[in-house]
Image 1 (cartoon, helix red, strand yellow):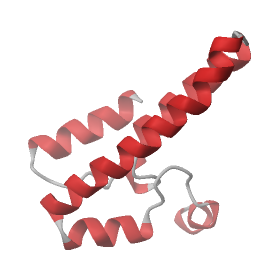
Image 2: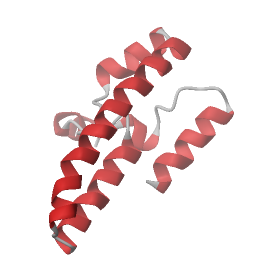
Image 3: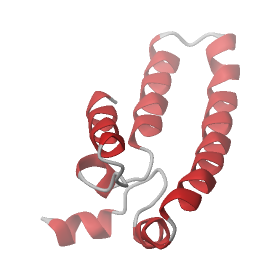
Image 4: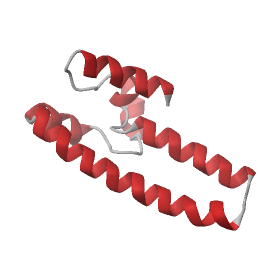
Length: 101
């Protein structure tokens, strides 16, 4: 999550679209990191509350990502659409992984 925030902060400071490092693999690496942390809590501390909240939080972050993407598209236009067309929202493409190595 920290690496994603660093990349995003640098890009925002330069008024650029974040497309490097983790953002080259997925459009929302911080949300992927947060989902993995939540999953870890679910495994480590399996209570009814964590079991109930896990899908709710995943749904909320998914909706938030869609809302954020609409704002980003307004700001970056065609550059965003090109990036979004080749970069998955949450789950990296392992086919692309083999091509990048």
